[in-house]
View 1 (spheres, one colour):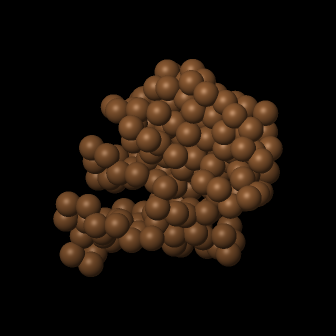
View 2 (cartoon, helix red, strand yellow):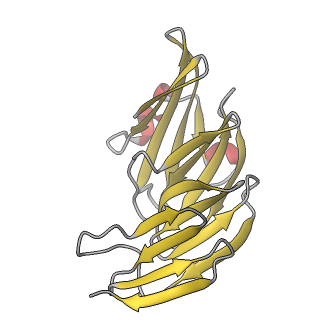
View 3 (cartoon, helix red, strand yellow):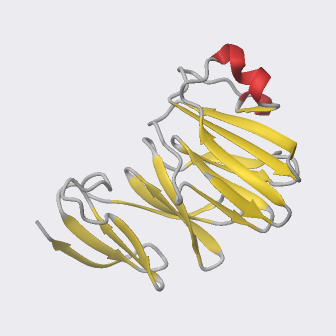
Amino acid sequence: MIVKYKNSVIEITNESDLDSAEYGQKFKIQYPADLGQKLEYQASSKHGIRITENGIEKCSALLLESGGATGISKNSFLIKNDRLYICCSDQIYSLNLTDLSANWKNQYDVATCFGIYEFDDDFIVHGEIQISRIDKNGETKWNFSARDIFVNPDGKTEFKIVENRIELIDWEGYKYELNAEGKILSEIKTA
């Protein structure tokens, strides 16, 4: 995925085929190792980030996480106020776009974080097991979990933001509507 931001080109890639001997050769920063943290298990998600200006690489980072595997999509990251917020496995990273230094990283689901979305002055994280509202500093304002995972086998859209409400469908076909404070406005069985 390639995104233009100000004078930079930001390339976000899936590096699932990259082996550990190549990490340092391809990327200058490696997280979570450069935060002084070790992975307990082999990385299930490997996301590369490269920022160039005028065709010259400015900085690069590799995110390695071992929760549920994630891919790169239009909703798995967002850019706001010179920061990149990106899902990698069960974590969200906040990185500075000047040098890809980390502002913070936090776990927001016990399985996988599928997407991050702007919501008022905050963000909503669509996880497999829970939905979270977080602020720009990564602080959790609320979490919501339901009967089952927020994945839908029937092809229905399982996550949607409509004005100041969040609409969800879980695996069992229950549809939930939440207000901005994470409280249930409605709950119905759709299937």
